[in-house]
Image 1 (cartoon, rainbow, N blue to C red):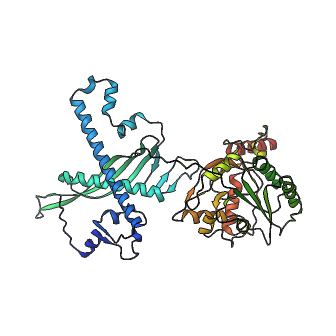
Image 2 (cartoon, rainbow, N blue to C red; image 1 turned 135 degrees about the horizontal axis):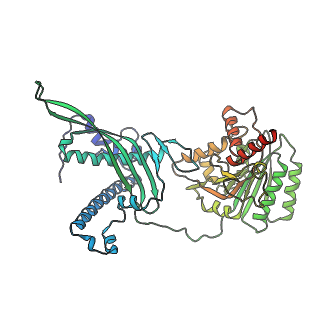
Image 3 (cartoon, rainbow, N blue to C red; image 1 turned 180 degrees about the vertical axis):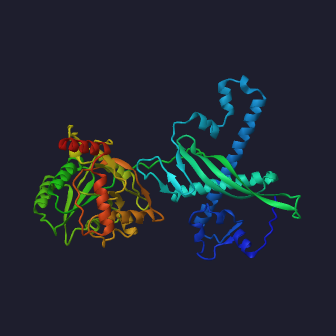
Length: 498
């Protein structure tokens, strides 16, 4: 088939025959599902085989979506024929055989247990406890909405072309929509749009031959992005698991250090786990004498274990302490950036290894942060285990990025810690964002019940920067107690004063 296209200007020609003059092909390295690329007839220059493969996959995916849409239309034809042929005489099993498993309206009617999330053209209202109640549409969600709009424009353009009495399509705007992720059928959407068009019709009472009429219609669109066939891969049979190198920055907090070492002994030392430990102590405020005594006891008790003490000069800086501790090991070392107020179990150590890959993936676990036990268990018996996870015991600390499993080579690849950051906070966020923006290293982030932040009182230094102090106060408030415990404490205090 030969298409003839009338080109009215050189600007239009540059859009259709797209040539990346500015950045030597880098245009094709980023997001491919853009209007610039989709509107083009040819793309040039593409000399890198990696770019060629990306574009090949992208346009094949577009083709697959078009074929799936044609399949849905053919299924509708079959269902209509089924009605004409009085298919009600068939058995229920035979009727199901005629029905496409991805039929959206059928799923909407029969599978209503999955919750819908609402969005508008600019805002998203997720139904996930670890997210804010409302966020702006950005990132992958923005890509998803743009893809929906692109397909809707294609559908409406085709509809208006086949029905000239509808006029000329001008624009469409999302009033609101709903989306849900169905584990069997994919991502489903219901959108309410305002579709604007222009119609021209004769006018008899004036000299004008025709008059322009602007029409705005409300349209409801149902979309579904189904899953493809199941694809899978398996990890190769693993040999000896790599050592996990625990890096613990420390200053003061003697009793907390005792608890940490007791847990480390129970989980790692007694069962000869493949781990190493570096305690990086900043001694500008308090003497490390008693801490060194504790460390020496474990070194003598477990002479085969690699337990390293590192003195850090100057004021406490988590970034500096962890950087110097990491320098004790080679580029292939798997590091666990730890804190002394964490409790962990053996399952977490396995996940630390599983969820990291040298040069490919880093693991930032979301730890469970305990509430103040004095408020949580004021009139109840405290649980024996720190690994008690429920809504009254604590909260998933999704705003913290301190614990991380990272290969040292990858940490160096993104520039490591910003050692200019002093005092509490921000150094972990800075490192996390460096990995997020790295083009080749994936950030794996998930709630991990094997990492518990044990509650302790937080004192926010007023000498911190405004941002650090604000974040410190916010962290202090968020891990104090559950809403129920706070109300109970408030009513108890009120009753005592009555």
